[in-house]
Every structure is written in C-alpha cells, then in structure tokens.
Image (spheres, rainbow, N blue to C red):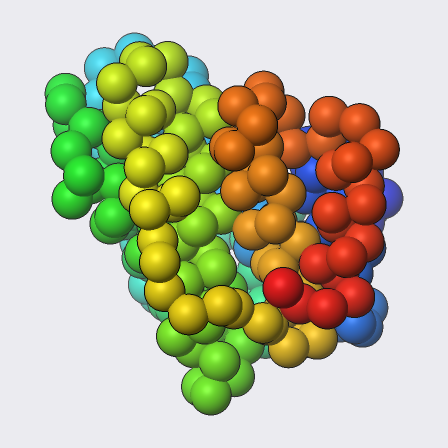
Length: 216
C-alpha cells in the first residue's frame, strides 16, 4: 500500500491535521500512529462478542510488546511500524485504552484510561518538556472524538463534560506536534457546536488554519 493510499484511509479531519506536520518524517510517524488508532477502533466497531475483540487487541498488544524482528511478515501496518521513530512498546497503552471501552457500562474511569492510552503515542513523538501539554491536548481530542461517536446520549454527554469542563491553563503546542493542536481545536469546536463531523464548513477550515499556525 502506498503512502497516498494510507493517507486516503483516514477521515478528512485527520488528513487535514497531518498537513500541518513540520516535516515529512514526522508526518509519516503520525500517519502510522493514526492508522494504528483507526485499526484498533475498527476492531471495536465490528461488534460481536467482546471476547473476540479482546483477542484481536491482545494480538496487537503482543506484537507491540515484542521486538520487530519477531513480527510476522505480510501485515502492512506492522511494516510501517518498523519505521516508527520511538519504541513500539510505547504504543501498548493505546491498545489498553481501546480495550477499556469494552466494558458493559462505559464509566468515567474507562473514558480517562482510553484518553490516556491515545495520548501515549503522541507523547512518544513529542519532547519530554511538552509531555504534559501533549497529554492534555491528546486527552481533549480523544474524549471529544469519543463523545462524537458514542451511540448512547448519556455516555456521550459524560465524555463531552470531561472535555469542556477542563479549566486548566491555556495550551500551546510546539511545531513538532502541531497536527495534534489542530485535532484538538477541531474536535472541541465540533463538540461545542454539537456537530457530527470535525469538518463542517469553512469555519472548521479557518479553525484548523489558526491552530496549525499558532499551536493553540
């Protein structure tokens, strides 16, 4: 699969965010992260027995936890992960985060674990100095994205309150993780407007541009 085909597999909002990556190398790393995130999301969307989803998630957890030399051939996403600039095991929390959603009732604790897992990959790509800011930004994006896709209104509203109730200090992310700033801005905007998609017109494009330039 070519890089163009990999990119086309992502929703429009994610593709737009990646356009603000400051280098081709970081864009590729973030594309790999988002493709893995989408693959794990697809496991849950397939429905069926939770135990089946757990087995599939466990396969990814095992692969990420072992040396790439032991990975099986023929899986395109694993081939992309061989070039991941950080250690693959740093993506294990991402798998754990998605698994946290498999409970019968989606608790606030499970939502926070999910958000922390999605944040871990972004933190692996950023600097230690920005780790806290990256974690907060990724948490906002993860929970907002969750709220936009949950089928139960009460769970969606709970996730929405977790995001919009955050009164921490203002965030400004550095250029290396500017795509995350764009995702955070678009998701918070969609949540506040109760929109169904991140890109809902010219206003979203303007918000992406502003965040991509300023990191806010």
